[in-house]
Each structure stands twice: as structure tokens, then as C-alpha cells.
Length: 461
Image (cartoon, rainbow, N blue to C red; front, side, top):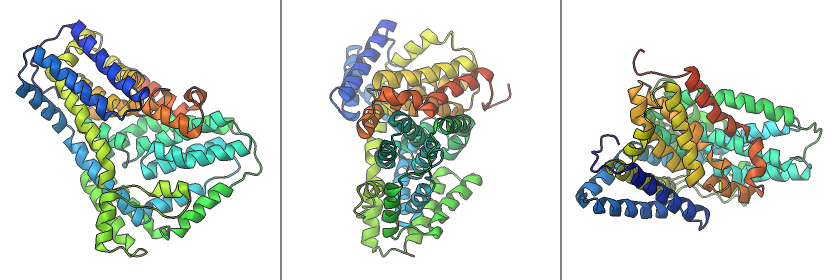
């Protein structure tokens, strides 16, 4: 977005006032009135357009800056469409149900919190949605913990940690795709690079939960067994259904572009579905557009499997377009440049720039409570700074996830925080101290920035 021509030079006071107004509009609308982010963002766009017109910036220029901003996210939009197809293909092909079945098989009496963390992590990767993971298997684990009189707060912390680990590392995740697309990094290159901070955080968190787990000899697995039985009744659980996953991994290893990789894997799932399903072409097209509808009769299983389709991505696609349009206005009106100029003197080293971008992502999460905006605005604001220091864009996309995606559930008034607290019936402040994975990730990304390790440069120093 730094290619967008600056049309006016606002004062620092005006820039701060406008940003504060936008933060107020979005945060109050979401946290107090339960609005979807789209509406307050539209109102914020109206505010910026009004300011631009008062500054005598032609409306045509404002409109073109919104278009330029939105166009910056088109790469991510195409990936979102393919992810919708992939999820549908992987469900009817049996890939997702089979992985869920094997994931539930891991549950055992020993190391309960660690098992919860691992299983929710696996399911989070498989379905690419942290909130769906929390609302389904997360609720089941809370029920088991309650029946066994095990700490609900720690269980909730393990659920949230696992769900957001899975969301962060899943190629099906909208936030992962968004972070990669915002800075024009290949999706799988982005996921691979996140491993440098995510894997250590995962290991430390796993040890933490293993140490906290109580000694239990017998565990009531009736709920888990019910889930497994429900999955088997779909007739979608088959060993060969893992082939699309193997194809996706192979394509990734051979560094095939994400668009082609997702397309091949989606098609393979569709082809495999004809070994055990009898969808007509009309039915197939409906599933690919509208998503798969599960009718097992077990609410949690139906919620896990009723998903996918191109239409399921519209919410995220529209939000990305609106957010980037607002970003285009912020740059065209010189607001971001004015704010960055005040801190540019102290952001002159690798460690300081990575810390600044991480704190920006955390601040947006805290003030606005919206992880999409945290990712988008941080990425657009710091692209140029990373370029100046010859830091590869994938360093920035990693920071955006380490300090953006996983921080949102820790904020009580955020979208994720409100949803998780109401779903698990555990307050955010209760589970926060035990959500170790989400707490460690931003610390590691800042630490590695100052130590200058696991970073990739675009040219030799």
C-alpha cells in the first residue's frame, strides 16, 4: 500500500484523533453491541472519506485509493475461494472425518491436559478453525473435566492453546491465509517459517500441560466414543481418504505454489469421494458452493462436518476487502505515514522493528478486539520498514500471526475472547494464565528478533 500516493499531510494530532475515533467505533460496535466487524469498518470508511473531502481531496482519488487497497488482497481472496472448495472436497472425500476419528483415538487417562492440547491442535489443523474446535471438541473436554473434577480453567487453557496452534499452522485457516497474502508470501512458505517460533512454543506448552496433568487411572470416554461412532456412521472414515493430505504434503515439499497445491488436493478429495459416496453432479456442485451438510444426529459432529464451500468464505472475503479499502484511505490521507514518522527514529534496528510490529498487532487486538484488522493493518504499516532492513516479508507474516492471531483469545472484549468465554462458560481471565501457547508466541517472536536468529534476509548483510 505504500505505492498509494499520499494526497494530504495531516498533523500528528489529526492522525491520532482519527485513529482513536476508528478504534472507538469498531471496538464499541463489536464488544458492546455485538456487531460484525463489517458495519463499523464501513462507518470508519465514511469517517475517513468525510475527512478527505474536508481536506479538499477529490472523491475520485479517495475512491481509487480504496480500490488500490482492496486489490492488494486479491491474492488472498483467490486462496480463500480454493480453501472453501478444499474443505468441501476433503469432507466428502473423507479426509477430514478420518483425521478427526484418529484424533479422538488419542484421548487416554494419562496426561489429560497434554492430550487435550494435542487433540485440539490436530483438529484445529484439520478443520482450520479455532472457534469451531473450541465450540465442539472443546465443549466435550470441558464436560469430561467437570465430570472428573479436574480444573476447568486449565482445561480451557489447553483447549484454547491447542485450537489456536491448529488454526495458526493450518493451510485451511483464514487468518493464516490472510497473513501470507497481506505481504505476498507463499502460503506454505509462511507456514514453514512459522515453525521456528511455533514448534518451540508447542513443545514448552506440551511439557507445561504434562506437568500439570493429574494422575488419573480411569477416564469416562463415553462422549469421545459417541463422537467416534458418529463419525463412522457417516461412511466417510477410510484409510485411503488420507491420500489428499499426502498429496498436499508432497506438493508442499516440492514447493508447488499454494494455489495449484490446494486445487490438486481439492480435486483429489472429490475424486476419492466416488469410492464411498454417490453424489450426482448437481449434488456435488451444491456441496462445493454451499458446503457439506452433516445429518449424523450428533450435534457436535454435525457442527464439525457442516462446513466448507465457496460461500463459507464470503464473510472473510468481504471483511478483507473492506479492511484493505480502509487501509487504502489511511495511506492516501497520510495518516499511517504521519504516525510511523514519529516512531521511525527508534525503529532503526531489526529487533526494534520486529518488536514494534508485534506490539502494534497486540495493541490493535487489545483496542479493537479484531484479529483480522490486527493482521491486515500491521502488515500494511510495516511492509516498508521490513523492506528497508532487507528482511524477507515472511518474517513480518510470522510476527503478524505470533502477535496477532493467537493474542485475540486473551482479550476479554475481543471477538474470540467473548465467543470462547460464552461457549466454554469459563471467563477469559480464568483461562488466560493457562493459555501458555498464546502467551509464549509473541515473546518468542520478539526475542528471536533481538537475537537475530531464525530470520531470513532478502540479501546478504
